[in-house]
Image (cartoon, rainbow, N blue to C red):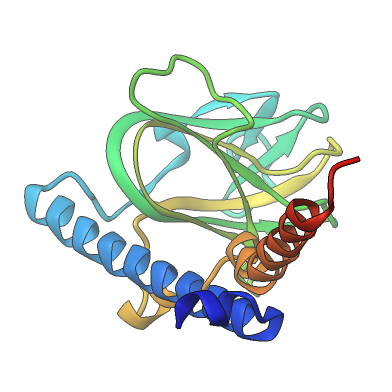
Length: 212
């Protein structure tokens, strides 16, 4: 029965969509369980990092003591080149990070790099692209990772000033949003089964081609 279904392209693609959706839901449930476990163990802190908790690289920090035109209590950051970094060193289980800033001029978006245990450097294999939160900041969904450090690149053009209001680790959100796919996951859910089905059909055609 299954073999007959997989021989039909439409039925095969439908089965692949069902399988991928099932795996995705299972991964989300595992992520929720991991989050609950690490929260119980105290390894998933919900906290907001101040500028003092971060190491600023190619970023200048300014406040009222530097410029009296800046309101008291307000912190501003200015990138000094095209590769600014806000680095946090610490070990934690992190599901969601929110960069609370209000950029005073348009920027090109933000990226978050996370370092996993056993690694000493940040690399492009472990990166999450920020999604604008509608208030000037960015949301990074890590889908639950054990990390030993985070690095946020707030822009990539340099000379961007922003009001810095904190970096929130494990920001609260409704539980059902754990099932909302990221952009990359949505691409896989939408296109993955089609690609696999097409590759399957190609391989079947090659096997049927008589040898000369």
